[in-house]
Image (cartoon, rainbow, N blue to C red; front, top):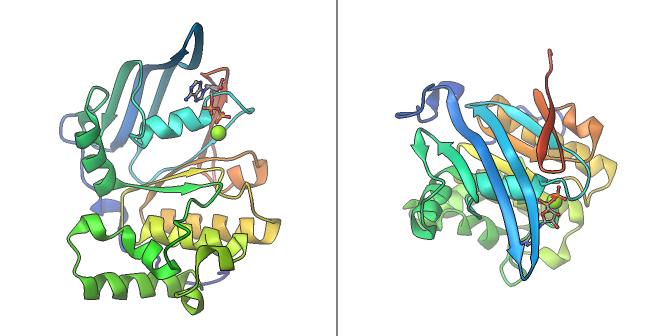
Length: 253
Ligand code: ADP
Ligand code: MG
């Protein structure tokens, strides 16, 4: 995927939906004094403690920190897969922290794509079907689903594997399918939880180049990584420790 100049999707920097109620229309989402406490039997775990983070439209932010510091919990809350225990979560000018599952899933489907360390493809579906699945919620005709899936597979250089099952692909190819699935619906925000964690350095670098290209076209990216080299692709990095923001670092390119 190196040196390609073909756009992966067509969101342009100025094209994202502006905030309506938030204080700043540049803000895609913000977490204010956000806490997440897991309670099971008699054990309480504070996974996130008083987090304040603001991410603007078009940013590329890396989240770093040791295992167990709350990175995945943070991504799950931003991705509306989990609710915070307290604090505010503004998304596109809406305070969504208290929303129920139906409303959250509606906002999620319209706005957020996920890339996971373990690819999370559906084993029983072909590559093309896995990618098309991401368009089912988007009122796209069957013919257009097929065309868009093929376009994105070509850009990810997996079109020749369209009818294969995920188990027949290498890890690098599976993650390309996952990236294709995350971008085919042209969403505003990609959340990536250690997307290169199961890849060798060559495939890892290629995934980072795909994410960089997407970001240049206007997609906001929040990415958890353990790799300082991969965090370098981001414009800003946030270090967590014990559920708190330890440092924030804006890089000059
Ligand atoms: P990271 O992704 O940085 O490794 P996590 O966000 O997965 O960290 O976990 C943060 C803390 O919250 C850890 O102590 C973890 O054990 C705890 N935790 C995460 N998910 C749950 C859960 N569903 N139930 C109970 N504790 C959890
Ligand atoms: Mg994690």
